[in-house]
Image (cartoon, rainbow, N blue to C red; front, side, top):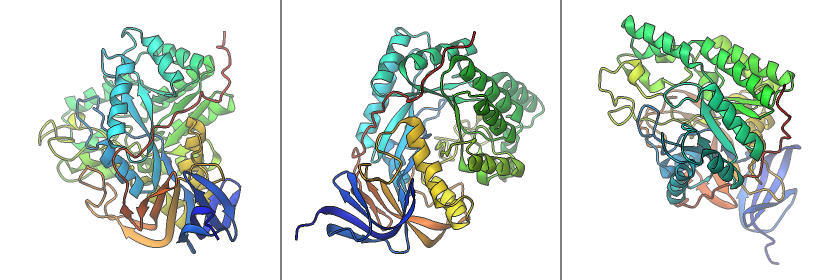
Length: 471
């Protein structure tokens, strides 16, 4: 008898959008061929008895091979970042194609595509970061890139890469005309500038002062304003890395009014507080990110917002900088918080942290875990054949051992950052095997893909009907 399938993952707890099925998942070529009981035979059979069979993770927010606004290069290449992601159970990532001042958008995207083609080992797409709307042919370039499948744009309301409100509305208008999503880093620049200046003047420049330099009101005001912009224009907006109780409440209120708003949060806001920044010397700089970690009450509010559907997904916001002169300490061993690059590595740790909380500890369950970390990102960002286990979908599959326990070490990740911000944390439940489009890229914890084997994801126009701007 011939083998009708290439691979069968047999006897696992398969998490689908219709519920959990105990049975077999069959793969032919790059796609899932069937899900059911007693499937087979196959050329290769995997015993998944006692394990969870999940959709491969989709990380919709990661900085890879990118220069920061402070002029510091990320530690990770596409090769190192995507290896790390795969070993953490992630099979698709959306990173950034960042426009430099004076650079045409088409040139920025071409540059990042070349980097990804050279190194990426999982599937990938880009958010285009718009920094300069005054370059030649800006509107034409942006429209053409959207039509070519780059269906999301990121803008900042702060830092030296910020756009003013008029520019943001211009970008929203172009996105609306062509079917793209606008993503926003929402903090009010004037509030941040005032708080930072006061701290520096008072000599309060240790890493733990970073939290006070980002008052929660900066996030609240900017989120509320971006929600109103979305409501006014009818342009769908994704609010990145919500960190506060009030920020989540602003998103909830806007969605209740019918505004086309989605929002995400990140593991460091769900599992850390600002106390993590209080370390000897400059060590706290390892945990500096923007917005900063907040308080236990914010953690509870964010979990509640995820449970209620007010926040739709959890990303890593992977922003990798080594803790040395090439990264966090580029301004020297006496750097103030305002001179230390912001960001944490997270591509490899996002899924284990969330699995431990949601599946092992029962804070939501396996179906909610799959939805927040794979299905919702695929749906919101328009990733064809990604994010769910069903016949005809890409065979992007992660096998989880719910019994395996790992205690994170000081430097046990597979990125190029050199430290693990979750050192000492115990994780129960671990991704042991990963398939990308039917090819096994992680086998029993061993990585086996090759640079450049990841594919670019061509995304269709945003499936949201925009409304006319309000008068």
